[in-house]
Length: 171
Image (tube, one colour):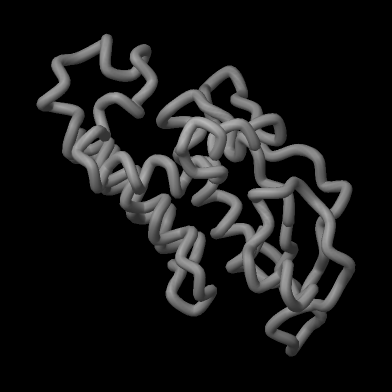
């Protein structure tokens, strides 16, 4: 979406329910209801803020400006959802002394050496844990890069795809 067209398209609402797998397990995006196209020659587009709370990049909440890095942020929020099986944001987490956003919750647990507790058991049950641990930590690390507070520090989606491909190859 970002590179296939002369004017990049920003999805703005990447979430688990917008991603489907085809018969070959290739991910397909849906729900293009709030996408925006960046005008030719421009770096962003200004539009009303809409989408799912917790998936909207912080700079867009402040400015109403959107570009490709907003989708990188949303993808970074989606990665811990796949890793843990938990919701991207949960208003009940703070009541339990946890972080509201899942990506922050995972980051905090990694810092406390409780990463394994965060991973969905269906992922770790298939193979011995030590073999997967490095790959899963790299996966979480990519989520953190994608959700850097500063959009300029986030990778591009092409860089994200390359990193995911590398993680797959070392498995």
